[in-house]
Figure 1 (cartoon, rainbow, N blue to C red):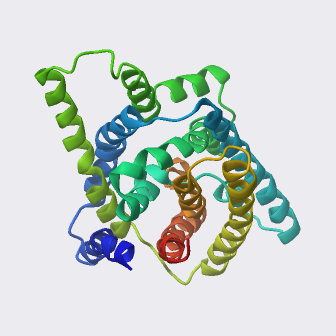
Figure 2 (figure 1 turned 120 degrees about the vertical axis):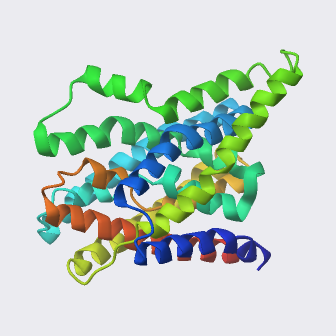
Length: 307
């Protein structure tokens, strides 16, 4: 119960964002600029600090390819369901895979388990970040304009603020205990912490502001979420038991972190990379992601109560 109470500020911020939307408090361009600020400035600062504090055993690194492969398996399952169910939209298989951590999952997990456990979920989400910045964006572009070149994929990956911040945090963290911490370095670290600290409030408000639910296309969105959540829950339980626990003997918080990743909605960028003139598919993606956000919040509360 205490954990649920601790999450009330985040839930309240999401509700605030939803209420502000009703009053058109922000222009759509302003919301986009806030998201851009978060994804390129404050979130990288939060991740630098997280990976600066991260201490893991080398055997845990197997979780990076495990999560990446899981994402590809979900796309395969999505294509299978699409053919069997004769689903027309080409985006159904993609909505089966990937997890919106930066603009959703981190904030929800942070609200329940705090800063001290944040590095765990940040580490476990590395594999899906690789999947998104390589396969997903390339696939989204290929649906519209043809395939990316390998060089473009690599450039996009290495230039991503998320990837850069993770590498920076890992590199700087490797110097802990070696470099003398001067008052100037402490000041820089304090600045990074302060900058990263505004990420969660801004994310929460934009989540609420972006919620879009309508009757049109609701059936397909519900089907998408039911298939996605059901399959991912099975994979989450199997991977938690056979890999995270039995094989790697990772602390229990990693199992909780993995569950939080598995319940997160599809990446928000799906909407951004979809052809904006294709209003039917844009509406399908927006509604599915919005509805999944609500389901994910409820699921996170259930996890906290059960595990």
